[in-house]
Image (cartoon, rainbow, N blue to C red):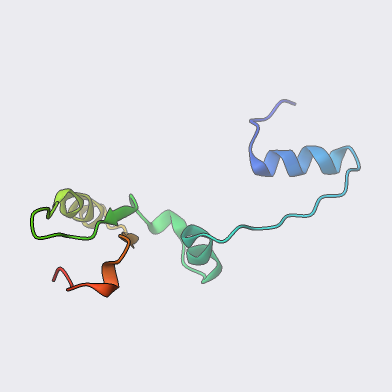
Length: 90
């Protein structure tokens, strides 16, 4: 039986061949969400909220938040670099 080559599939194939497998998880926001017990399938598109400047204040992420809300999904918001060291956008 042929399967797609995913991380899980690689582990399954290795174990079928008797190869010892050790998984070392990387640090990521998505891993943290899952480890905390939150259900990733309840999340819609993840968005990035960039750091605003005096001349640049993008708003494209608002539509994505609204779309996730309409679908009954949570939104994981990644905050741009230096977000907390400057004046908040709200």
